[in-house]
Length: 175
Image (cartoon, rainbow, N blue to C red; front, side):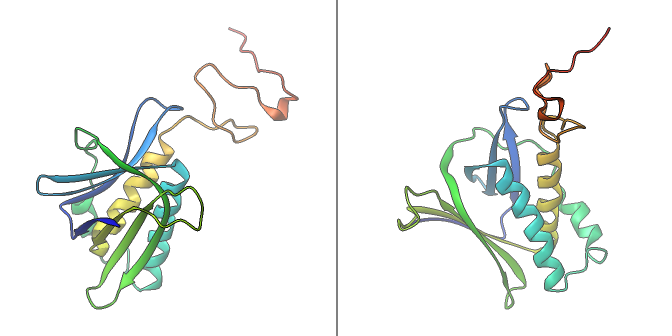
């Protein structure tokens, strides 16, 4: 198995490429000049952010106590270029390393079936403040897509959408 390992990287972020509705989501780790980018689904980014918050709360890392560290770890810059996808993420694991007091994220390459072993994995070890900064950015990235329909909650395209709550009829604007 090929392991892309980053222990306390310079940068670990989620980001997108493309316009809303056609965005490709990535996790990107960087240490010095070495960069690893892996593709994943929007839902995977959202779940990872939520689970990071849950994990940090479970292990007793106080959000208020490290808020200044999170502000310093906040990263609003775009993904590093060029983006060369190493693999598409299938499953992820999240753990707390008590000895190092760090979060460990493992993102395994997608496989054909659940019985197959992943050929590649991205392993990232983060300080709590950087993990919380990652989670905050990830939530912003996920939320910055297409607006949701106020009636059905599904994403709307710029030209609107056929809302199931309107019995399949497209809402017209009267301008």
